[in-house]
Image (tube, rainbow, N blue to C red):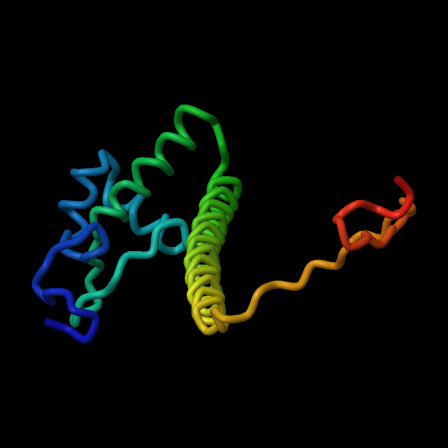
Length: 153
């Protein structure tokens, strides 16, 4: 396993495994077209030790997208390159937003935990003070005599 905890022999969509002839066949394009797209920077496959191109499943998918935009939508290669660049930037920003949201959620959880710790530290023998509202009512006090009757009776 590598440092990120993944199996180094695990194949993903990003693993460069297809030689140019196989990639051309899978994408439905001519090998010269793949070379041209590589020179233009539309699809940039990895290179093997002998400098041979190695395409991933993601590269094949991108080649099909380039073909669809070019043939079906009539977009020129410069426009396709710009579309790919913008989609890549949007994807990177979405990933960054997801990371920021995760960090924000973590910070909010830490804040709630610390608030709970503060509340748990409150002394339970203290009672919150509430200020008494002043009233303008007049109360007359009359002392009672020895028989329990008020003096005004």
